Length: 238
Image (cartoon, rainbow, N blue to C red; front, side):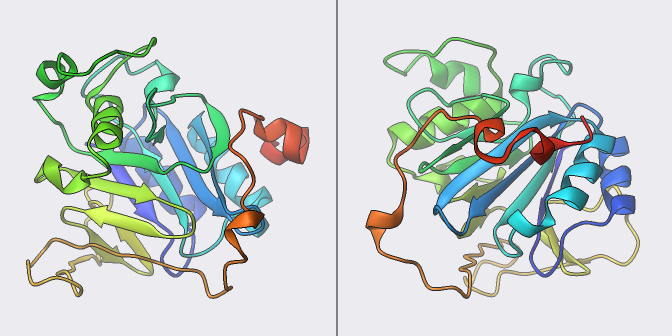
């Protein structure tokens, strides 16, 4: 079982990352909204040590309220295939690069969706590369105009330009919002949805305090790698 962690009031500690990574050892992804460029950015395929170093060295660019981490325990697809780590871009390719930035939304998922392979057959084309239920969900959300609620009991978090939408049951844990706390059962409690009447369906939209500038300030989507924007020290600890 994977775990999604949203930095609601703080980022996860090194000890928490260690626990989540140990319980879900098939790779870690971190995604966030860039406050200046209004883009969604990500890096994935990290080990526990790399994720801890990334948070320590890049806390200035990881805003509270619009940063997510995902810890994978493979249920579909090969565990060693880092392209199947989350997130995936919600676009026509369900882009699965190990790092990048985009104006499109980013998807992470906790759960196992058994219908994915059948619904893959309904798509007009299938992108190249490895596939999992989560990559398929990204394709289907894109093709159905972002109707993420279609996926029922699946736990999803979608990062979209400074806000996070969640679907399914999430829990609050000491300033974090988690898709589960199986990695650390103590001191956690179930959080019913404060925005909807459906108990247990926590859907959160978090908007940064800083006002958005005009849409013209949003840079064009690009395949430019994070190295190109921030220099090799940006992911030091690799």
